[in-house]
Amino acid sequence: MTAIREIIDVDRTPADVYAYLTDPSHLPEWQLSAVSAESLDEGPIHAGSRVRVTRRIGNRQMPMTVRFDQLDPPYSWDLHGIDGPVRPRTHGSIEPLDDGRRSRVTIDIDFEGHGLGKVLIPLVVRPQVRKELPRDEKLLKDRLEGTTD
Image 1 (tube, helix red, strand yellow):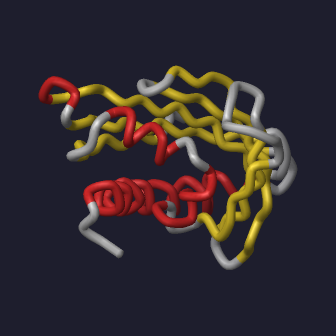
Image 2 (image 1 turned 90 degrees about the vertical axis):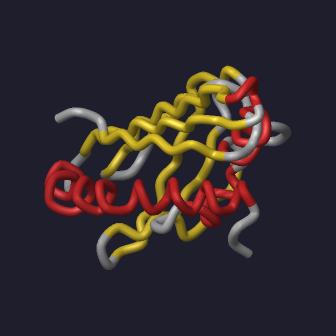
């Protein structure tokens, strides 16, 4: 299977977009399936930082831990799940537009299944993410552009 990819343009600088996207406290604000997110490590996010995310998948709430693999502010980040039956692998990139006044955000996400996750990914997770990711990016745009409360 190939990664699910969504792209959206945002009327904010790459630095603003990057700061918002890589701050775990904002995750439930713009991702519909995210119930909660908390950093498990002290200090600012860095390569190796872990975040505990609880997601609604179908009718269940599933906690998982993700770890940031690489951060290249304000242009890209990579993270992957390190526990749970469904482990995402996400790459995000931010391309400056209009001399850096605007940004193009690209999010690629794929999944690795363990145990029950091998069944959940094709039947529940992928269909949910294909439907949700465009709405998530629209909500991200609205939040960053100040068009929603």
